[in-house]
Image 1 (cartoon, rainbow, N blue to C red):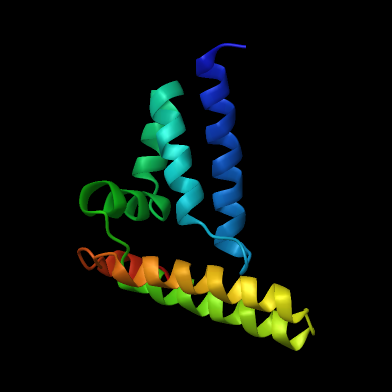
Image 2: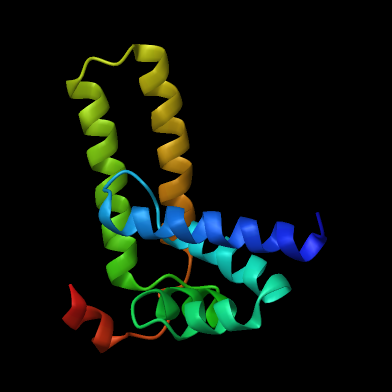
Amino acid sequence: MTLRLVWMLVGLAATACGIAGAVLPLLPTTPFLLVAAYAFARSSPRLHAWLIDHHYFGPLIANWQQNGSIDRKTKRAAIAVMAATFALSWLLGVTAVVLVVQAIVLCAATTFVLTRPSGPHNPDQDRQA
C-alpha cells in the first residue's frame, strides 16, 4: 500500500468521524477535520480543497490554520458538550474512579479550548446555528 493511499484512508476516516461529530453530541468535530485536512493535503488536492472550501467545516479549519484559534460559538458548544458528558456519566452512576479520570481529562480539554484565541468573528457561522 502506498503512502498516498494510507493518507487518503486516514483522511476519509477522519472526515467520517468529523461528520458524525457534527450530529452526535459526544463526538468532537474539529480535531477530526484538522486530521482530515492534514491527510488530504498529503494525498488528494481535490478532497483537501473540498474540505477547506466546505461552508460548514471550512471556517473551523481556516481559523485553526490561520490563527490557531477556535471561534466563540465552537468554544461554547465544546464546553457545553463536555459538561453534559460529565453530568450524564454522573447521572448514570459511573464509578468514582472513572468520574475522576473523566473530570481530569475534561478539565484539561476545557483549559485547552479556553486558552486558544477566539479568532475572527464569523457571522455566517452564527446564521447556521
